[in-house]
Length: 115
Length: 253
Length: 180
Image 1 (tube, chains in turn blue, yellow, cyan):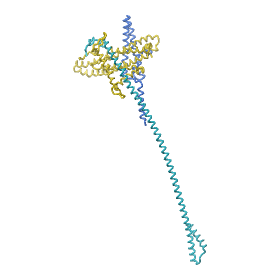
Image 2 (tube, chains in turn green, red, blue; image 1 turned 180 degrees about the vertical axis):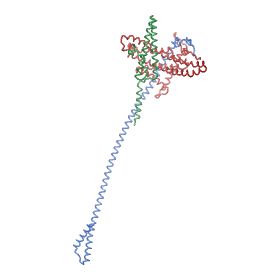
Image 3 (tube, helix red, strand yellow; image 1 turned 180 degrees about the horizontal axis):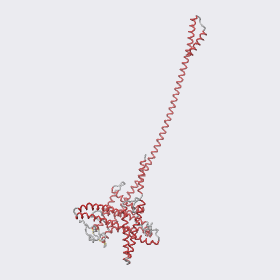
Image 4 (spheres, helix red, strand yellow; image 1 turned 120 degrees about the vertical axis):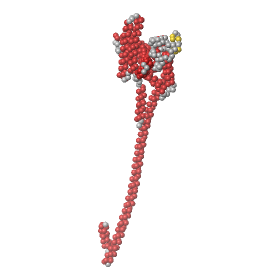
């Protein structure tokens, strides 16, 4: 007799419960991940160059400060990209969305891939 | 006003109202004007949308609520319930970047977010806030973000250096990505759009066809892409702010 | 819009980088205006907006649970109604059965009474018929004796003995009554 109503109530309740779950925003995340990887890599190399140049200026290590720091910056850039890609792949495998969240190079969370 | 074909001309800062204070030049520039338009546009719209709040929302209220839920969703996805206090901050950054980016899509409008001074101020502010909150909440434990767990001691010093580099690259990456995207997009748009009249004038008949049939669709496509990028950069900036804030709250967990 | 373009106006170079003299102005106004935006959002606009959203979510949740409760109540009412109807039906059936039994009993009593009265009248009527018959029979034998005596007297000239007449008449009557 009231099956229809009960069903509608159950549906409304389910919808309400679903809203309480964190909703992943999925659109266009792949592009965001791409932009992020590229700029993380370049930023790390620039940091290396800047730091190296600064050390050279301060201590007169030229050109070794620049060379070493540029190398470290490059390694950091690769690490950033690997970390972001690992995180994105993990989230894609986990919930089917190209996850942008937590995709930052999380210091202290990338176990061992810094080496 | 003459249409300049120099693709860089659109990024020229001009002083609209020269102000000098304490030896600094704090003139009200076209950059400040468009920041003000974005800020007061956001405030005006939200004030209008929330002026008559209803259980069954009207159009403006619906849009405002979707906007709010979107930002709150980003914060909640990353920071869960710890993130509540950061919603206004993330909302401010996201909304400002989004609206400033979109304003830049209009012809002759200035794109405040295509300038390093603006993007790096926001990036450095965000990272500065992360450091302040991290130290305030965790004290020395905040330094844990530089020491990943499970790394053998003999290699730890190297990892720490890399992590410090990585941390320093964050504000650079954050600020650089935004300004570079806006700059590159607008330059590309300007150059390709500039082809159309150039072609039309240079090659009277074929040029018009080429301009109309080949370049115009390209310009339309880049414009569409630019709208996507305008949104995406605001979104990425917002979500990375959340991610970095999460590091501040839970270093090396 | 070109009131007074900054330093290296349109002289080649790269405007985003080579306008360092405008950085303090850009940063100053950015900080001031974003400060205004943050203040307006955090103190007035966002609380209003989030409250409206929370209120609606609460209202929807309350409505749904209320609807569930009302539906439960309706189900209970339907069940109670069904029970009442069943009870009423049972009572009705019982009443009808009792009434039928009563009326059956009354009908049976009436019928048996009427039967008895009819029976009585029938037997009394039969008895009367039998009486009349025996009476008639005695009258017949008397008449036959007289007739016989008269016939015998006419034929023989002498009156027969009454006993002999009665005897023979009785014999003939008995024979004829057995013939019938």
